[in-house]
Amino acid sequence: MLLRAGKFLILPVILVGIGAGISYYVVNNPTDIMVERLLTYDKILECLWEHIVMVFISMIGAIAVGVPAGIMLSRPTFYYPGKVIETLVNIGQTVPSLAVLALFFTILGMGFNTAVFALWIYSILPILRNTYAGVMSLQPEVIESARGMGMSPWRILSRIEMPIAYPIIIAGIRTAIVVNVGTATLATFIGGGGLGDLIVTGISVRRDLVIFSGAALSALLAILLDYIIGRIEKGLVRWN
Image 1: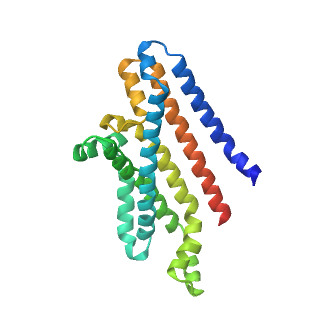
Image 2: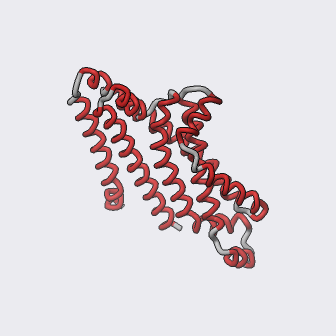
Image 3: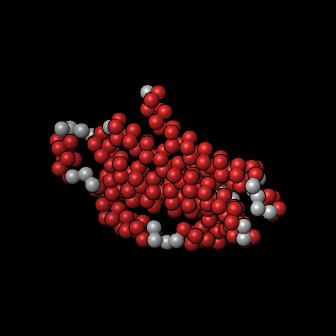
């Protein structure tokens, strides 16, 4: 057990260490007075915390809506509406993330809450699509056999459909969370804060070190979250 936990923590510790090292370097080695004012530990931690909160809240909401909605649309009663919604979801994924943020900015105004809401909407799409595809990938003969054994619809869903669909559902969540981390950097354009503040500010004042700080921490956060979700996926598959 301890050995397994140690293996799990190796990459997160490395990534956190790299992030801490980058923060230490940029704060203690500013290229000029402007960079010194822009890059402080308080500022970096504030942006990182806002970014994590945005991603966490929007992802929890997206999973809470996307998975049940995908399961519901996979039911025979909703077969044709499910196909229509799946097509709309696929089309929705082609909309640029900045356009989604801009759309809700015009409706709800600027601020952190608007950014979270837009990220929530954008994150639902891959989760719903993968949940629907995962459940629908099951062969009808398997369902008929389960019914013939007297299993209830709920038992079929929990014991057969969901365990088989787990890898596809988790893959959708991994996709959504990585896209979410990247999209959250654009929240700065509507006053949402996050690591995008460092990137955009660095571009505005033409300071590469500030841009690098925001971009590097965003990339490390995406890798870390993808790794954690991947380990959860392996655990669920092993448990099932």
